[in-house]
Length: 92
Image (cartoon, rainbow, N blue to C red; front, top):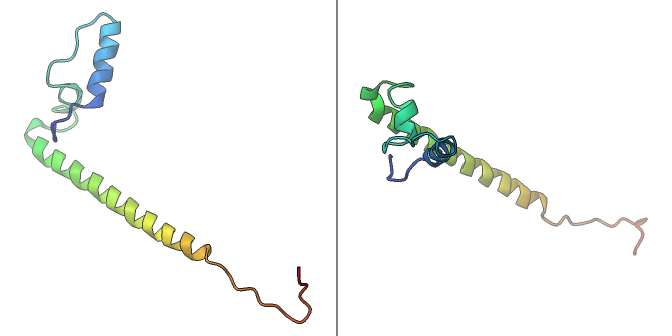
């Protein structure tokens, strides 16, 4: 728990285990049970958590920048275009 919230996968895992008649996960939760010490060494846990935070923040910042640029393009493309009337243009 990096920010004090339990992992949603813990609830799903416990639900599935309860339906199968098995015991629930230990109090540490899904990530500590399946990922910590398996995917990365336990002594590098703080480093990995920091890298995950950096990756998530970078992706959100990139998303917001991209959304802002697309939004500016959409606003510009929706701007009213002045129609020029030539001598042969029909008037409706």
